[in-house]
Image (cartoon, rainbow, N blue to C red):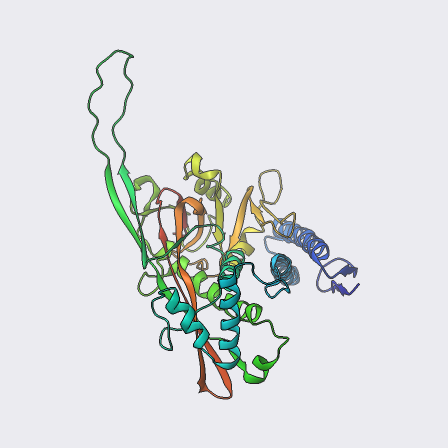
Length: 421
């Protein structure tokens, strides 16, 4: 079996060299060993601060290197989990649906040679709008399903939000602002008429997201190339990066509206239509004394019914700061994942790493906590389209691939923010 070495040295502060198998178990063990080294070094740093009121520069640098190694180990673990979850797209067994078989063959011919006659006939038969050179052609359902499945794995907010697939340009839902009046009555007593509920309509339009992978004609002529897998691989990362930003900070103009783009209010004065926040009391930082208390305040600002499925959302730099926090018994609040497909936890709640979340700064909302399954909605417009362009970047062939996606907050009770101010 191929092996990799967990490179260590006296300067890195990590354990002695040990060969690890290149796979999921080795990655988990590597991550656990790195965190043990992190705890040991951070304990030494805290002891230096207690003895001399300041930490040694060498210890600080050593801790920073181990912290970076933890992030790298986490990314390797995520990649291994994603790769193991990918089924082969181009198997020898053809789809059972004859129409799907015909669509796949026609799409393969279009991508390789630019022959669009077969796709035109199929989309005319299905009365599909927007077919032809200007609108592109629908990719086979196998590719669309695989792209969406992979996005659910690597797009941080999509992986914890509710996802709806719609056939129109937008999704609308009615929400109750204040429910009908209710009360207790005796078995034979007269039932008074209750007030009608007040309803409000939320609208989630689907915006267009595109990626433009390129290939040489020589690559496309290679019969061994699995066109389905190649296209899914090329567009998944581009789509995930754009979604990751939009679902957090998007302004709702030609893109989804991120949860940080909504109006906020102090949680004690919360009203519907705004996200509540808890302030740390320190500009751009955690409180100087008992910094962990504010995390508990954030957790309990959320109703009990929402806490059961709640997650922390933050970027890796904020997570790096929190890794050093301990409880009153000296236990670290942040804990590494127990398996490749699990998330790290903070005070028992999963931590979702979203790089679009802001760094610590005065007035920033750098940590979100809530049940995003109930709080945030992602809307996917059915259909993934590709337009072949062999002219714009010769000798490369471009594939202008588009999908329509929207998003926004659907339950303002379900998400709370930590404001560093």
